[in-house]
Image (tube, rainbow, N blue to C red; front, side):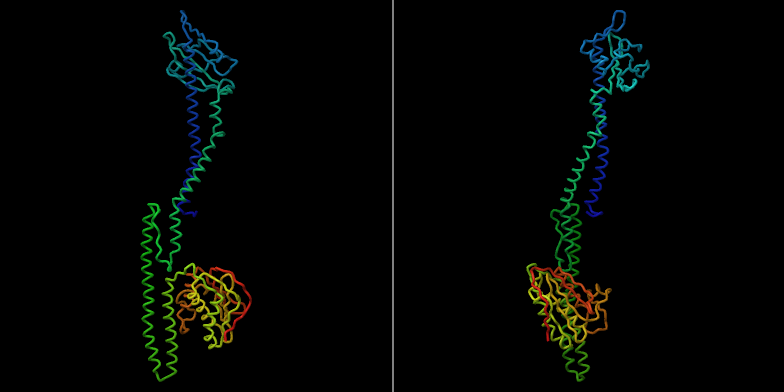
Length: 463
C-alpha cells in the first residue's frame, strides 16, 4: 500500500479510530459498571433501611424500639463486620444503633436530608458507603442509616469495578484489531476492480491503443473517472492513428517522385553528377522505407505462440549482409551457440531488428574488421563491432527517432535504431549498448526464451 493510496488512508483513519475507541470504550464500560454497582448499592441499602423500619415501633412514652429477628440481627453483628445501622429520630439523636459510632449526618435544613442520601466516609482504616433513608414510624419521621464496609472481602461488585482495567479493559483491543483486519480485507475486495483497472491502464501504449478500462464491477463513485479516462484513450488513439496514417501516406507519396527522379538522373550526361544524385536518392529512399516501417510497427502485436530460432536468424542476417560488407572491405561473422535458441517472437520483425543492428555496425566498423553476431542462451544476441563506440551520454539517445550523432552523414535519418527499439519493445525484450574490450561497441538484445540450447564456440565467416 502506497502512502497516498485510498486503502492506506482508510487504514490510517481506522487505526486512529481504533486507538481512540481502545481508550474511550473501556472508560465508557468502566463508567457503566461503576454506575451499575452504585445503583446496586443504593438498592441494597434502601432495601435494608426499609426492612429495619418494619421492625421499629414507638413506645407509649415516645421512645423507639427495634425488634429484629435473629437472622436479620446476625447480618449487622459486629463479628460479621460488613453492615451496620443506626436509627435517628426527628431531632437527629441516635435512638438505636448496631455501631459504636454512628455514620455522619447528611446535610439538610435540620442536619438530615428530606430525601434519601448516599455518601462515602472513612472511620479509622475502614472505608464505608452509607445511606440516610427517611422513613415514617407511627406517624413520626425517622432516619435509618445503613452503612456497608467497602473493604469487606464479600463486596465482589466493588472488586470487579476496581480491577476492571486489569482484568477486562484489554478485551476490546484484540476485538478491534480483528475488526481492522476484516476491514482491510473488505477494502481490498471492494477496490480490487480499481487495482485491476490500474494494471490494465499501465499496459496501454502505442501498440495497444484499443484497450479500454472496464466499468463492470467498478465502484459507483469511480465509474465517472473510468469513463473520462476511456474517453481520453479514445482521443489518444485517434491522434496515434492520424500520426501513423500521415507518416505512411507521406512515405507512399514520396516513393513515386523518387522513382521519377531516379529515371531523370539516369538520362543525365554527366556521370559524376548522376552518381552523386543516385547516392542522395538512395538515402532518401532508405528514409522513406524506414518511415513506412515505423508506421507499420506502431501496430505490431506479437502473438504468444510465435517462436523464432535466434541462431538460424543470425546466420540468415549474416548471409543477407555479407555482400554489402565485402563490397566495403569488411566481414560479417556468426559466433557462439551452434544449436537452436528458441525465443518468443516474430521471425520477420526480429530479422528486421537484427539486420538494422548489423547494418549499423558495418557502417561504423573500420576496413578489414569483422562485425560479429553472437547468439547465446537463454535468449540473447550481441552485435559487436570495432567502430568508435557510443559515448555514455548518448546511449539513451541513439534509440530515439531522428536522433543522429553526425547530422552531416548522408543517407541516415536516425530511424534504424529506433526501429530496433520498437521491435524489441513489442517482443517484451530489452536492448542496450556497452563498450567492447579492445575498442568498439556491443549492442545486446535480450528476448524471452522458450527452449534450451546446446552451445559451443564457433565462427562462421562470410566471404
